[in-house]
Structures are given as structure tokens and as C-alpha cells.
Length: 106
Length: 119
View 1 (tube, rainbow over the protein chains, first blue to last red):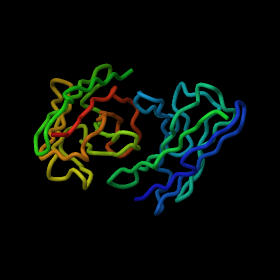
View 2: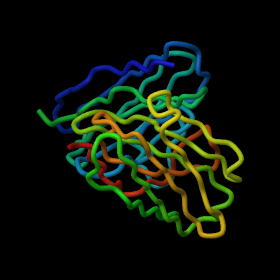
View 3: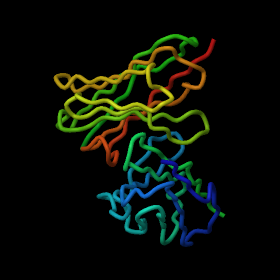
View 4: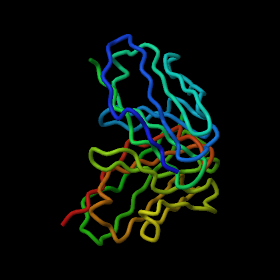
């Protein structure tokens, strides 16, 4: 299953609303997770099953979608949100990740 | 809270072998599936392999099938990735990760271990 993530990078101002999309090549129901990866660090789970916020993750992060089209939103961009974000499907093997979206501050 | 510590990376020549290890603490290890994910320099994440909680089933990416073998020792809370016939394109940071189900979310991650395949 191919996961197409867009954009591959974006630049936004602090406080902006940021949205990333992930398109699956086939129906994956809601079997989609979102991760944040900061430079030199391991990925961190933010959203699971398309829309569920992982414990301890700030509420400015959210996810939505089902089937083939998904979105991930940061409602108000903070300095600590500078990172690369990845979607991941687990509907079928091989498990696949999107190509990533690098978020920078304008 | 789960803690994962990966180790075993290093420099290896093309065609060589290497065994990665991942020690897990803070979880009931035998109840968790385990996964290896890699990241080539400057690239995105690539799922490599997964093993069920009991170790009864393993799954591999096509890019490593037949060359890599994943195993686990539930008495010692460790998971392993034996890598053989290594190629330059296997050069990456290798992360172990875990979640309750072999198909699901990866709740906990190791810090990563670097594998470099070069002559």
C-alpha cells in the first residue's frame, strides 16, 4: 500500500494552523497513525487509528479521515513543533510510511 | 512506561553479517509485538520486519526478505535482527519499536543503532 504524503515540506508562522495530508493507494479503513520525528531522535507517536490522540500529546495536534484520505493538523504552530511528520498504515503488510513532511518556521 | 535499548550496529563490508539487539524493560515483554524500522541517511522511515508477541510469526519487507531474520527471547526480554548478505543500501539507523499488536501503532521506540555497509 503506497502512502503519499503532502506537502513534503512547509514553512509557517508561529500560531498558524498547519495541515498535512496522507493519501493511501487503497482503502485502509482507519488503520493510520501519525508520528513526529525531531532531528537525531526516534519517532514519537502522536495520533493513532486516524484520530485518537496519544496520551500526553498536546491537544493542538489532531487527525481525521478514513478510507484513503487522511489529514493531520496542528491548530497553532509552536516552536517545539519543528520536526518531520510521518503517516503510517497498518492495514496490510508490508507496513508502510508516507514520505514525510518537514515543518519549519517562516 | 516501556524503554527500548538497541545495540549492535557498526561498520560492515558488503556481503557481511551483523546482529542487532533490542533490550526491553518496563513492559510485559511477552505481550508485545516487536518491529524494526530503519532510516537511511537523509531519508524517511522504512518498516523492515515484525514479530508477534509469542514469536510464532515473522514478517519482512521485500527488500530484506531472505537476508534478514528476526527473532525474540521472551525469557530475556530481547529481540534480535540478524542481517546477512548486507548491501550498501542497507546503510541506515535501525530502530526497534513496539506495540501491542503486530499490525498497529508503535508506542515505544529505541534510540536507534547505526549500520554502515561499506568497503
